[in-house]
Length: 499
Ligand code: BES
Ligand code: MN
Ligand code: ZN
Image 1 (tube, rainbow, N blue to C red):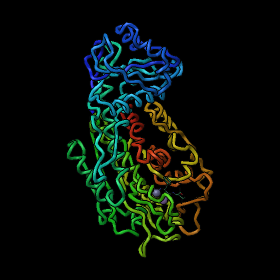
Image 2 (image 1 turned 90 degrees about the horizontal axis):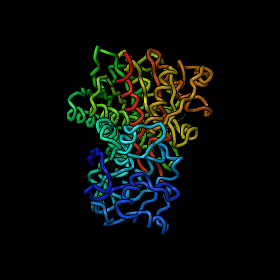
Image 3 (image 1 turned 120 degrees about the horizontal axis):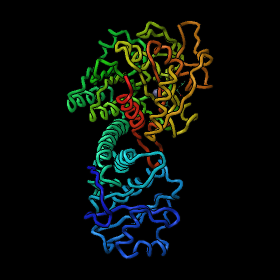
Image 4 (image 1 turned 60 degrees about the horizontal axis):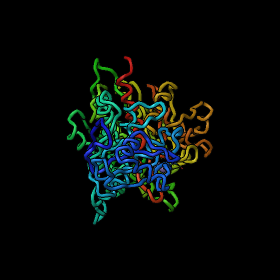
C-alpha cells in the first residue's frame, strides 16, 4: 500500500472515500462537522436517525454525499471522546481500513489522524495509522493453491494532518511507519511459513536475499563445519536429532558515525520444536512452527532499519535448527560444552531455546557491543505470566530494561520487566556439569532468563521472552510480527541519544 500526507478540508477532497470520525454519543469530530456543514446537515440527520452512535470501531458508509467532492464518506465510531487514547485510535483506524479494503475504493483520504490523542503528537498518529493499516490488510496465502483475491484492495491511503506545518513531520512519520510495517510483514511471513518450508537453510537464503535488496547489509551464513569449529557444542546438541542441517546466520549493518559500538539482536530460530526426546504432547504441536518468531523479529527489525538507514550499527545473529527426536538426538542427562567453555547438563531436551541462544550470546562478544537484546519464544510459563499482552523483559541493566519498556509503550507493542535475582539461579544447580538447562517449574520464565544471563556477562544485555505475543491462535491464527515495532522504536531512539 502507498501512503501520502496532506492537509486540507474533507469536503474538498476528490477521492473515492473520505473517512471521518464520530464520537460516542453522536458527537461529530471536527472533520465530520465540516462534511455536515457542506452537506447542509446530512450527517447530523443520519446520526439522529440512530444509524451511527459513535461506538468505537463502528462504521457507516455513505454514497454521494451532497456538497462534497468524494464518491463516498465513511463514518467511523471513535468511542467516548475523553477515552480516546492510543488503543482507541488504533482500533478506529483498523476498523476503517478493514472496511475500505472490502469496498470498491482503491484509495481514500483518512481524517482520523487529525484527532487529538492524549500525549501523542501528529507524528505518532501518522506512524501508527500506517502500521495499523498495513497490519489490517496483511494476509498470508502464499501456500494456498488458489489464493482468495480481494476484489478491489485498498491501494493508496492519504493521511490528513491538521496544518500545512505538520506536513514534514507527517511524511517522516509515514516513512517510519512504513518501514516498521514492512519489517513486521517480513516477520509475519517467516513466522507463518510451515516448518517443512521454513527450514534453517531457507532462513539463511532469506538473509542473503535481504543483503541483495539492501547492499548496506553484510550477511554470512555458517554451516555445520564452521559452527563446529566455533565450538558451539550447546547449539549443535539441539540439532543432533534432525536430518535438517543447522545454520548460524550473521547479519551486519554497520553505519555508526565515529565507530560507535553496535547493537546486537539475537533471535531464537528453532524452525520446529517437537521437544526432542523430552517430546511434547500432540495437541497444538503445530504451534511450534512459530518457535522461530524471535529470529523472524530480528529479520524484520533489520528490514525496518535498512529501509530507514539511520546512522547506527546493528548486528543480527540467528542460530537456526530443528529440535527433533531420533537415534542420534541428545538425551536427558547428556552433558554438552558451550562455546563459552561452560558445561551444561541437558535435563530436558525441550528447554532447547536457551541452549542455542547461549552460544549465540557468546558469539556476540566479538562485537564489543553497546548492548545485546535476544528475542525468543522461550517459555510456556511466559504465556501464563503476562498472557498475550506484553512480552517479558529481563536485563542485567535496569537502564536498558527501562529503555525497552518505554519503546514498547510508544510502539503499542508492550514489554514488562521481570526480575533476574540471584535467588532464581539456584534451581539450575547440577551435580555433574557446571549447571543444568532447567530448574523446577516455578518461575520458569525467570529461571530460563537466569540461564541465559550466564552467557551474557560481558555486556549490557536484555532478553525478551515473546512466547505469549509472537503468534495468535483461533480464528486469527498466525504470527503477529511482534516485537518488530518495539525493537525498531528502541533502536531509532538510540540514533537520537546523546553520545
Ligand atoms: N518453544 C517452547 C516455549 C513455548 C511454549 C513457546 C508455548 C510458545 C508457546 C520452549 O522451547 C519450551 O519448550 N519450553 C519449555 C521449557 C521447560 C522444559 C523448562 C516449556 O515452556 O515448557
Ligand atoms: Mn522446547
Ligand atoms: Zn522452543
